[in-house]
Amino acid sequence: MDVKGVQGSIRFDGEWITITKRAVGQPSQDFRLRAADVTGTRVKPATWLFHGYVQFLLPGSVPAEEQRGLMAGGRPPHSDPHSLSIPRRSNSQAEKLVAAVEQARS
Image (tube, rainbow, N blue to C red; front, side, top):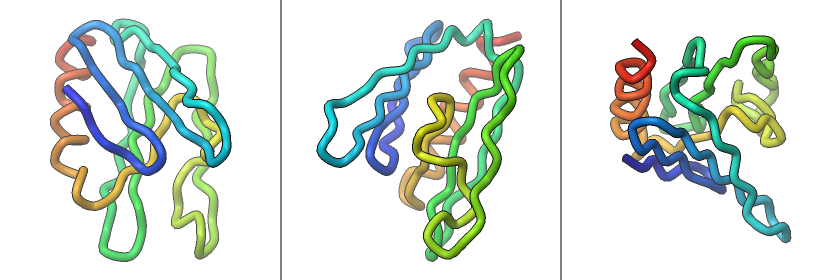
């Protein structure tokens, strides 16, 4: 199950979540999380004006705060390894991925 994000993607294979981020001028970076280790998820659907995001919460880590301002649009910073910004066209795929992760957690 894949979700195309803004400068990256999220892939879930039933056990592992792989967040791939691509910063401008940098090589791709993969962050792997085991679904059983995830303690919660946060999803903010994208709108016509602003990107949304998917964020995975892990024990012992503080969730990245949403950045305020016109350019950030209420999303966690790009440097947060446990979240990814999503465009509006990926809202339904993101909801399905989060539902699959939540099911795998239980």
